[in-house]
Image 1 (tube, rainbow, N blue to C red):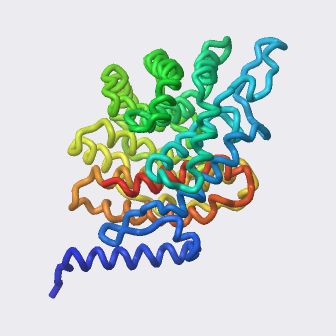
Image 2: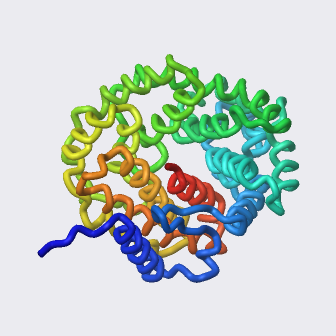
Length: 379
């Protein structure tokens, strides 16, 4: 006779399974202290030690100007300038977008861990970079000739995520930084309005230009701030691009330098804009099953290679996408538990490698880890 297990038994079984998966993927006791596991639902919670660890990585890089990879178009010899001269706020962390999401992460941590040992240094560093003058210069940069596609839309999306994190924060300095960033935020929002009607086809890559990723964070910003014109633009654009998609070629993934899953990031965007029932129907046509190559973590063979180490980011972004998709499915959906288990395995298996000792990954991966763990903790 088949006996249906009780809910507590399922929770216990899931917790045991998750702990086993953590052990299998090399998580040490020290690594586990970066986060805790809520045994009631298996979700991850960043600990003070973890927050301090990740904050240290960002503080190390956001004031480090070199090495640097600028996405800068030089129109003449007067445009041959240093990264800091071009980007007085976001000159560190190897590239503009990594500096932006490094600042986002520090704000995120400061809001949730105000007594962090690094709190004073975080405030001092952000205050030095995010002055009114520096952020106005960042906004003015977008008006330079040849910069129409600068950071489109990956850096744009992270900038809006930073603005969203600052919005509504009951903190004197936070309110000031939010005011300072407003000209740049307005510039980026205007870029979305200008660009999306002219982009005929979505970009379905696993790296920076991915359209679905660029739309996801912009949707979060527009929804939270009540920017209806941007929200409607993103919804209409998303439906135009993706609503008829089905049978995503997930078995082609991953690409050798992916830090996003083209299939999962699209689904994570669509769960934002579609009503629950409509999304479930769309999702099961789009991804009828979760293939083995998405269930298993991507192998990172060389963390000193700036492209190969992208795959650590892929494992983390897969985790946050799967954790975003799962709650949009009904409790009876047969894929729901598999998505959650796969998500947590990817995150837990990658956290030990964030501080690899090589700048190729350390200048950006902490932000991905914090975002992924933060998504896990959401109800």
